[in-house]
Image (cartoon, rainbow, N blue to C red; front, side):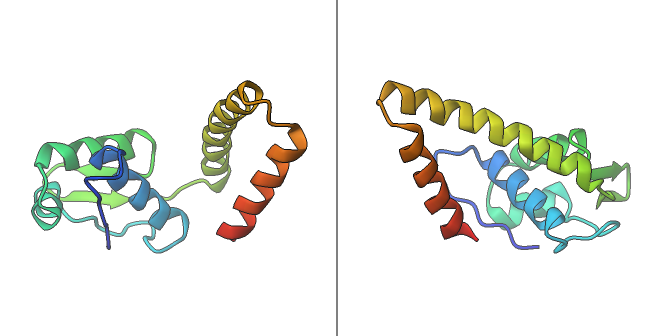
Length: 125
């Protein structure tokens, strides 16, 4: 499992860890039942506090991506793709609301906004 963190990104380290693990689960890089490194080992590998990895694992467990078994470790849970998609749609909606607010303040037209979205989407495909 590869995780890269950046101290200069402005995104909290635990969120960077969460997002990368979620991405690896969603893309199938990590499969149901795969063991994750212990919080202590991950913290040591990333040279960060164990509290940070604990927060990331707790959030991943709360969101249904992993399950932790006392004395055995943390494992990837089987995920329901419909639930994952619904969660993604909700997060996207929140981000789009922010973008629309800024577009309205900046007098950016709907056509301009759609064009930006189209270009960004094409770049990422």
